Image 1: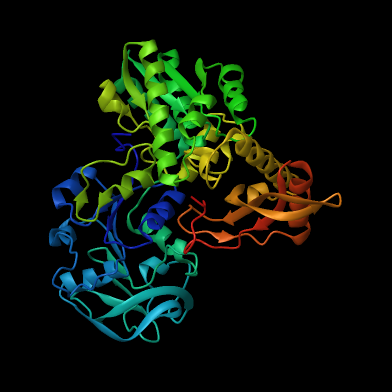
Image 2: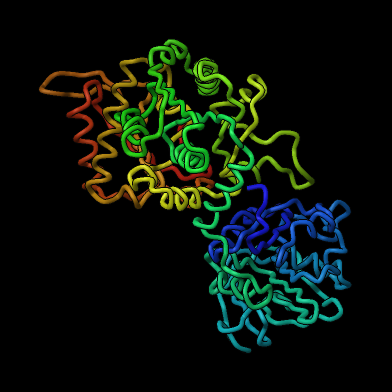
Length: 519
């Protein structure tokens, strides 16, 4: 949305912490709208956003270094409540007259915090003398308090681990309340949001939906919009939202590249035509994509060819409609954040993998109604829009589809092998009640063959690797310790039922250092 003024808002200034997005998510969990901005934005810009509070994130720098990131010092004179976390607290201390020095002993990981006073952020969760396990990550410490501040808590190696200036409503925590390792951390954030900032719980998917519809109608007017459907949650929710706003002036185009999971193409068509009764143009282009991928083994080249072929087919279908002025994209908030450097906006916002370059080529204006939402919020919106759970809760799926789960060349035969193996994985994960407990579960077809024995005969056939991971957002992931009997059942079914496979292996790598996908 272009105007979020109807919601109470908290602005987060980003100083480079790996946890900045997590702070924003924690704020939104309390149904308060949050936005992340580079630390360098000016006071006038902050005022124009009309925030109820300001949070300064952590970061890897030291505040006393020559090139250290500092915010505009006038921020502290705005009268807006401020919470500094880790580096953010040190910056408060440094810019307001305190002194920050290198710690004699750095603190990383779990640490015990002791409360010295009943601080505003600790109301209802701790009194003087209370102890909390908190998560530290710093090599510097505040050595001298700035005027007007008092110490609220300390750790073994940090004399000022929590500070506050009640008169100016400025608070600092040397630890990270946003991570789950910190006991009562989210309640500390809650106290800042409600007791200090006076925020109201107005940020809900119902309120977002109502405001989005009004803004989409105002922006689109009586023009036509086209939307590329991939079969994934994001593009589906975009289509449902825009259709709710402008009706059949939305034209959905589904290019079936043949690289989806078994049955997914027909599911997309049924969902739109029968379930939601939304007009849909569907193009069966599997042969075109397989032809484009012939002989290609490099994963980046696969992506380029799939993207190029998609754009050519999508453009052809879009021109048939005629008179289109807008292109809808499923850009999410993490895409927007990642395209913005700490020192300011980058030149271009990251383009959608499917339709990059198309807006300029066809002179289309972009409509990105999900650009303020995180992935879990998109699913919440999908639920409000009536998207069936089996679609709304679908696991993340790569844009190039199964092409990057076939290591090596993509052929019709290899594609059918992988689709059959993957279908068994999904069936068994659902049957054993594991499907909703994991982030992703899928099969990979490896570019090697191994010796086996079937029916007293020697075989030389393909290897399927299984990948099952748990994650919060895909940024990090750990392999799932599936029960041995489930793994045994998966292996047995795949080898017995998928012609051309005689071996199954299980990937026990975490991210990092590995990635979730193999290509």
